[in-house]
Amino acid sequence: MFENTEIIPELLDYLSIGVFYSDSEDNCVYVNKEWLSISGLTKEESLGKGWHKVVHKDDLEYVIKYSLVLKNDFKPIDIFYRILKPSGELRYVNVKSKVIFYSNGKVKFFIGSIFDITKITEAENSLQNTKDYLELLLKTTNDGFCEIDLNTNEVEYSTRFAKML
Image (cartoon, helix red, strand yellow):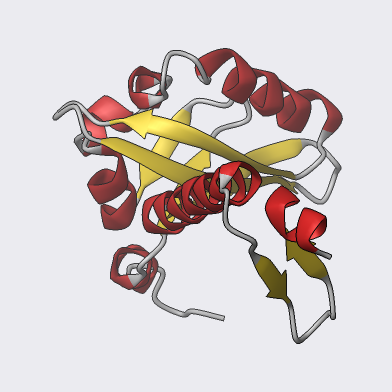
């Protein structure tokens, strides 16, 4: 497809999604600029198993487990976890990875992408917190309160409203 393979790293560095690939032993051998931005690591720090140092300590066992599923069962993975950058900044990421085989069926390497979903995750958390707060308010208020979802025709109401019926 590309006559000049030198264009591929430049193309990968232009993407707004992190890209990586690992050798057949699952040692990272390439990361693009977006991966570096998401992780906060240098290229050198990211290679081999170096990228493990930014996986949140509570997520590392989970991440390694799924890396082994990819390596041993050859099943693509699509996982979510947290990265703690060297600066202390917490990022939420979605990682997808799959195996690339030689024509003889042996593992050639693993390719993957990493997408920073921090803003989406924080927005979802904020919405959930607001929902929880409003549900608590609805349950504890002395005022009668009723809400009708016009899309689904579902009705929610406070205990006081039910007594008023």
